[in-house]
Structures are given as C-alpha cells and as structure tokens.
Image (cartoon, rainbow, N blue to C red; front, side, top):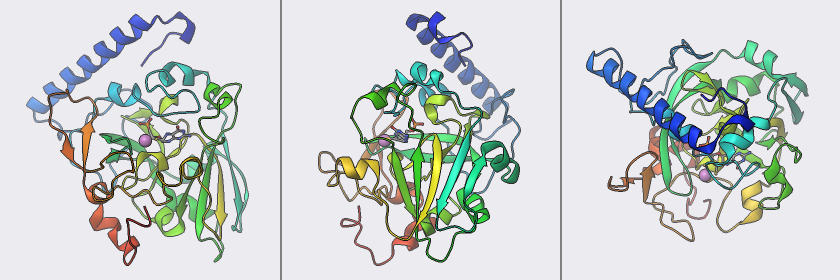
Length: 314
Ligand SMILES: Nc1nc2c(c(=O)[nH]1)N[C@H]1C(S)=C(S)[C@@H](COP(=O)(O)O)O[C@H]1N2
Ligand SMILES: [Mo]
C-alpha cells in the first residue's frame, strides 16, 4: 500500500511501488505454494486489519488475481473514467465516520453507523469470480458478510420486493460527479430474493485488509453472478421498494444495461460479444477464457430466473 500523502507521490514512484509490491506478493505466494502451505489463491495479507478472518462458504478454489492489479485497475466514475486515476483521486474520500440510511418498506428504518453494522455482522473471506460487462475478469478474496443477514435486521415488510442502493453524492470530493457521464448519484438495485441470496455480499475489505478507497470503501456490494456494475461502491443509502427501482446505468443506456445484468455468454452486449473475457493481469499472449453462464454460479442462482427469457430480461 502507498503510505505517503497523495501530493508527495510521483507517478513514476507509484509504478515502481506497484511493481515492487506485486513482485513481493508473487515471491511470497510462490514460496508458500512450493512449501505446500496454502491453497493456490489463498494469498492472505499477513498484517492487514482482516489478516485472520475465517474463510466463508462458497469460496472458490481459484488462483486469485494479483492484488495490485485489482487495486489499480478500477471502475469508479465518481472519480474518473480512467481505471488508473481513481487510485490516487479516491484517496480524498473520507470513509470514517460512515453511516447508512435505511428507508422504505421496513419496520426499522433509520441511520445506522457502519461500526454498529459491523458489530452485528462478523466478517469472513470469500474468493469470488468477478466479471465486468466490459469483458475483463478477476478473482478476488473479498472480506465481508452476507447482505441478507444485514437486511433481515431492518425487518423488511411484505411489500419489500426490491432493494435499491445509492452511492455517496459529494461532487467536491468525487471530482467525476462534476461531469455528467452518469446521472448522479450512482444507483443500483436487486430483486429481494437476489439481495437475500447467500452468495450476495456486503464487502468491507479485500486481500486481508480494508478496502482501498478506489475499490469502494468503506462499504460496497458484491454480486458475483452479475456484471460488475451491479456491485455498487461507497453505499450510503438502502431503500426497500415494492417496485423495481431505476438504476444509473439503465437510465443512461437502457438498451445496453439491463436491471438484471446476469453474466451470460449467450447474450451479447449490443456493441460487443460477451462470450469470452480477459483475465486481469494476464499478458496479451494469454488466450481469453470462456465466460460462464451466471459467471460460474449457475448451480446456486439459475433457479432464481426459471421461466424468464434471459435475452429479454438482460
Ligand atoms: N459507485 C460506483 N460503483 C461502481 C462503479 C462506479 O463507477 N461507481 N463501477 C462499477 C463497475 S462498472 C465495476 S466493473 C465495478 C468495479 O469494481 P472494482 O473497481 O473494485 O474492480 O464497480 C462497480 N461499482
Ligand atoms: Mo464494469
């Protein structure tokens, strides 16, 4: 991690530091692997805040993507449309204290401090596949807890059929919000059964440590069978609704980004194929991998969509 203040870091230094870090991680991983100490992929931070959290269910036995690649190739339009710039720009975001407003069809609406939420919801580590709609993918050891466990405490009413999530709106800090690439704030949503599904996570960390700001600190969603844009960052509001909410990407391009956004190699994006993906960090000579339906989570989630035409409900 970068430890200097933003203004004192030269861009050349950032690159060197990132290369150094990734090499160090690689050597650590390779040494541990050859000693038979860890499963491939279980590259845990040794000193991070979440260094010793237990492994949760549904964790994939996959080689994880290099942490520095995940932390320095982000989509965070509140800061920049450039995947590298958010690393530095998002440092300006103050993530403590943080609270989440809960409204709508619930018996216990209110403003909840993140610290209190975390007291009620012990964290675990889960290695998940992640697939961006832009056809790149990664495998990340997230730290978090099942979203459903958190939502149940707010006691949704029987009218709660959908859940809407909203990102912080603060154009003074989130410089990208001063331009109109999206209709701010960023909003996403899930059907209530998707939100309650045990795979769906609220995430506070990755690689054994707290989430870097650019990856959505202090609280983000991870829905591993859906395209990455559903996994909204820096959540400040959760609303329970009877009707399907409008979402930021759907509003900006309804024919390109649907509400469901389930990973599906058979349904192309209007401007590109979704049948294959480039693994983040792989060289240009590495063949792309075939994209899996529901991003490999069919067994767990396909039943949520039985009887639905997935080319229509894309
Ligand atoms: N608030 C907010 N959340 C967001 C985005 C964003 O621009 N703003 N980008 C989305 C997209 S397109 C992807 S692919 C993932 C990327 O997560 P990562 O940057 O941690 O890899 O975040 C999603 N969540
Ligand atoms: Mo994305």
